[in-house]
Length: 324
Image 1 (cartoon, rainbow, N blue to C red):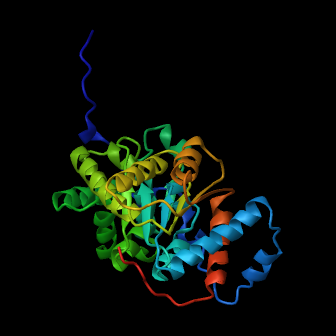
Image 2 (image 1 turned 180 degrees about the horizontal axis):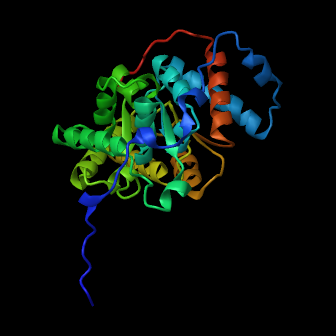
Image 3 (image 1 turned 90 degrees about the vertical axis):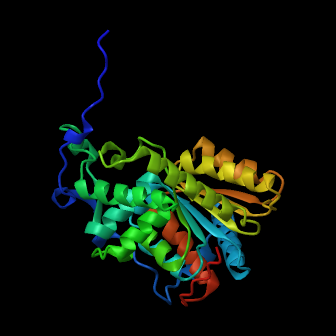
């Protein structure tokens, strides 16, 4: 049998992201809710039955956690960014409502592209035919360089990329979750499965740096989860990776003697999958706490949840309360 030779990655043909057609533009993103929105009376008209009752209880749990300075942590699949919700989540970060955020590897790609060019989400089907899928030069170069630099300095991927975006003077930095985290001192951690993200296809990718940066973020994420007692954890749009790290971080925290028993967990997705239901909603709350599952499109359900929370809090004051 003929020996299999490695592909010559250094010969990859890339192109500028500015020449790529993107399906999501900054003009399409959501906008933070103005005051006097009138959402509270609408929510009051909903029946106290099934998911509508759950929505009221989730809002109440988040408001209670906020008032008691407890953790409100988000775990976000990349689809949440692609459907234009960054401005709403950044608004919660600036208000001091969100304590930490966990992303998968795809999340940093869409977050960076929004900051860099104001658009993201390439047409995979169209670009795959001739091997152009994932070959945007700037995305890979900037992100891989930041990850490698961060690993060398002992910094996780989230902080390394957030600092890079914040200092890069890109035209649309205000839309970046990672930059907001770096600016506000809110942990944004990134959890990578090597080979799943387009930046891993480029010669600039350093597997050792990616692994180290992701592991450093897992350590930081675990420190956040150790403080979840009395707080709220929302898994939004991640079916496998983030539910798995949540379960491991929770076990680690309890093993090391931290009390993490009484908290609220929510899985929000347009399809309910096995791992989020089992590893986020059911197993962690089998003795104490409360677990909820909300089913619906992120671009509708997340703004509705946030609007309800802000109405419950009754405040427009933006004040970062992160103590992590």
